[in-house]
Length: 189
Image: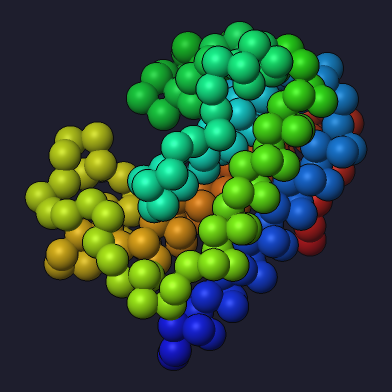
């Protein structure tokens, strides 16, 4: 398979997945997003903020460009926990809430636009560049992307597929399930 064909597929898959997030956020209220079903169950707010904030961070690793997230976005969105929570427990992150939902949606759209812009201009050969070499540091060694990585390490293609696509679909699945807790339907069949 050619690198150009792979890039075309990645671009289409990202747009499709991002459209699910856009549809989901457009059809939920902040009360539904912040709803806590019960102790130990993460709210939709966690899945949304966690994925978008980590996508923003992953882009920094893949592109070398600074993330979109900054103190101004934090002040606008007002998350209860201004952290993606990757290295925190469910017991901590179950309290995640989004303060200003329209501001969060604006942040999400900005991160998606940044991602799609980068995917449009990336050179096909760039997919092979190693972004994290083996041996992996402890916080990377236990990740899905470490399991996917080839002998040299995690490549740009691995990062796109694991950190952006697979990770996004995983959290969309959580969002689809959690929507049923607040009386909404799933997004796909």
